[in-house]
Length: 332
Image (cartoon, rainbow, N blue to C red; front, top):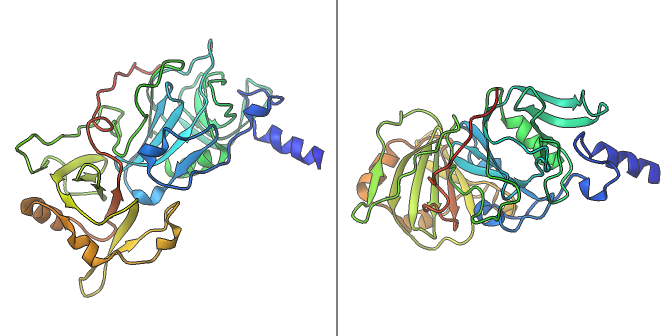
């Protein structure tokens, strides 16, 4: 039994870790709720949240925050996962900048560190920086790679594609002054600062007609901000003030259109709300969502099969969306 356990521990430690350090074993915990923005402050080393149903389709971007040692995954401009990480230790700092995924190898082994396993490797630079499953002691301890919990790395590997964008920002060791990530992605699929538009005092709603009417639609309903934000193909396309009553906690639903044209918002059993799977969102509850008429018209003309709605208490305000980001150019 001891021999089997030792082998499992060694297999769970990557080339950037010391196999003899108990704290370097990969995390396998998962939080029980999907309030990603709020969960960020409470995650312990090895913990993560994964709820890809929040946005079932669209471009995927990854934001790694060296300051907070957290990685947030966005799809269609909406957060679907957040995880603790371990990045480069002093002298081997993980470079900041905008990177593309250059190589994917689920069973990769290091050519530099004694053939050590690097499960679910997603290469960011040809000189050895990558995302992969690795040790998570609670502080930066790698030789430059970004270590992820094993299962989180596996899930991420399955939804990313070659050329996908990974942004690394912050600086390890700096005080954390704000939570990393948020409900809305602060970056677009090219790694640039995303364009989020706070409503002015006299605006009830707005719609960006420059965003093409093509691609998956995600609707975020913030009960805290009393705002509704619409995302399409990773871009914010609309935002409105709303009166939102009667919703508690977080819920995710997707639209199904029956043969007679009737709309059915079916709840999805995401982590912490598994019992909701397969139930239909109460029409009476939807009637309590009051929107400006012009915005409702724009939305009704565009929603269709597969549209996803996230009802959340997390904010979509300026403090967690649309903040300015300074990025250093990545090395070739």
